[in-house]
Length: 231
Image (tube, rainbow, N blue to C red; front, side):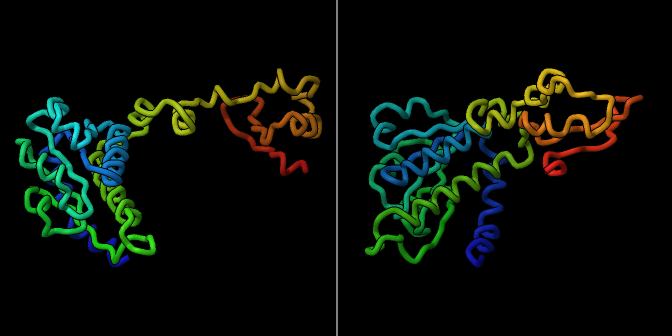
């Protein structure tokens, strides 16, 4: 909790600056930090933010051509001393942001915006394999991604960018698509004969709830009868 409070206090103004100044983002890193950058770029894209991941080595071998002059390049490096990123930072003519554990590192000094974190060590028994540090980079990257769209966020945007999978199904499925037509499913039920005429048939057909409306106005809810009420 102490770290969370420190993060909110020290990074809030920086995020507000990024929101106001930049509309395009290039994320890059090497090794596990590169994977963290890929993940955060994907989060931004899902939220409708113009973002792209490029590998630092590929960037120096031609891929830098996709980068616009007004983009912000975000460098992911636990040590802040990754040689490929330092070379790239010297080459590009862009504003830079750095996500690193060392605020005094070379990359931090080359960047206009820094998002730092502190951990005692990584989680492996030697404390050197990217584990905790990797997660910290992802957390900061995702906080940055979601903060960029805080005011403009909408379910409609996510439905457009994420139409597949469980998320897409949840966001795009309408009530009419899942609503059961009682006339087709529960044949022989007397819908005018009272509740006792159809709970068993509804239960046997997998219906877990029946909405009861007023006879004189089908748009007015009179009650609800569930499978649990019957059983």
